Amino acid sequence: MNITSQIKQPIFDEMELFEKKFYESMSSQVALLNRITYYIVNRKGKQMRPMFVFLTAKMLASGQVNERTYRGACVIELIHTATLVHDDVVDDSNRRRGFFSINALWKNKIAVLVGDYLLSKGLLLSIDYGDFDLLRIISVAVREMSEGELLQIEKARRLDITEEVYYEIIRKKTATLIAACCALGAQSVIEDAVQVENMRKFGELIGMAFQIKDDLFDYTDEAIGKPTGIDIKEQKMTLPLIHVLNTCTSKEKSWLINSIKNHNKDKKRVKEVIAFVKNNQGLSYAENKMMQFQAEALSLLANYPDSDFKAALVLMVNYVIERKK
Image 1 (cartoon, rainbow, N blue to C red):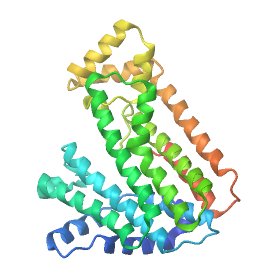
Image 2: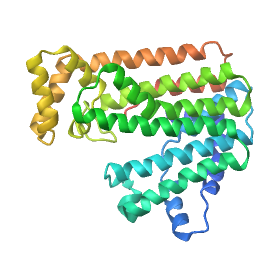
Image 3: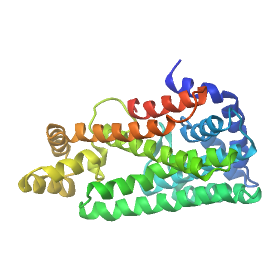
């Protein structure tokens, strides 16, 4: 049994029912929209985010979930899907998970409108049932994700990112959505602000580790979801690169910045940058930071009684940093 199947095992029934509810939550009177949402549902990813919602809820409520938990999972997946559709437009990307992206098949205008539609469906799902506590969690996540993306674009122009700013970018851009999943799962089953915050922090720490793992993929030759060196080509400042920029000589720093700004399409130069980062402990530094976030996340679970759901969350944390793509 592969690791994702193991993680899903204690929430297998919930995930089956979730898929039906998720598809229903996207339905529309417009045939074109239904055709596109059908395409989206049939090309789903690992569905990590709803898994976080259900595992957190079941760990805190002795294996129980309710309709609010399902709505929380549907909302987070609607929002996540909306951001992916919009990201593909922003990045001018024609592929998503090995299939054609929405903008590649139906053009940018339709893709932007579909993203808007999914976002509004997600927010309305909470409003229609009066889940205003869940809506607050989700709305904060949407705001932070937008801020994180714009902060990254602003900083990429000047290539002046410090490690602190980098953490702020990935916290908002990536970690905030996983944090929202865990907070939603908790909030849907209990009324305990301390526990909800504990779970939110747990999700945030996993999200930080997840993004650093993604950064490390830019320096590996393994067959993964994105080509090696793509972050450098897109002038994205990742942790291995930031660390090396902050520790190398001023001459080396000038060469690095010049390479990223003016020679990022030159394959030979990109390879030289990758080799330089590897040789100057950029990767080992980032790996250590990732493992610190992992250890901190696991320590937040330590106080909860052992259960299949807790074990699956521990497995999930370890999977985040051991995954190969």
